[in-house]
Image (tube, rainbow, N blue to C red):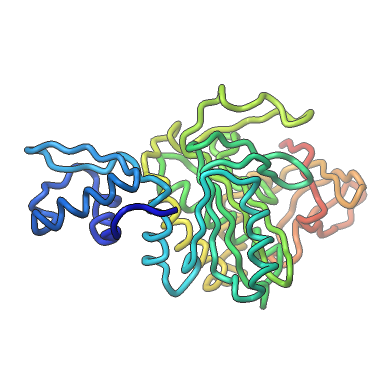
Length: 319
């Protein structure tokens, strides 16, 4: 996405992190600041300016996201960013990137404002009106890890960001949902292609329930968004925080740390659940999670089985 002029990333960073307006003279030399603010306007950002109160960033535009993230994450996840106003799904784009670049694609992040064919697990759809969510795919290495751990780490990272950006308590519903008060605020889709992991993440930021269908097939949709729970952060700030947290959970956190974080936030521990796994319907009690292999279920026959996320779907949960 092209825009006129070069973005002053430091100034944009100050505006993103500010709790309120900043006086113009506190941002630096007036002529330079005026030019930098004009570049942000030219890139589609919305600014609220007042001669006495100063300037406040109301909303960023996608045209400045790549510059900001690539500067902030130049050596890690997000060192390359592709931004789309609309695409079928960020997972589709990521597959194309991996096919073209192979392992050189590690660290690239694909972001979209809207998806025409967003998807979740087991063929389900992901609904997100344009501008209402944070939609991305991060391309990572599978070396020393696997889809189960990527899903676990991504859920923990997303839950951390949800809590930091709102007044809510986040819960994790295995294998890939983050909830607030029982309603879905975000989800994860982990796929592997060409020996690399594709971590698809959808986070509802500003959501009007009227923009969503009531069902996905025969499954009722219960959704919420950050702005329903005091979340006021710009989507670019959320992306910045999420990439930081995602990189930590995937590369620095131990299996035990992720396991403990999941147990603390899980809404399924010790609950009776019905799952569909590899075509079989199982009923039992959730007793734990193996970070590398999946959910540990004590089935009604008394045996313990480990269910991988890739081939298991949660059908029902109860106390």
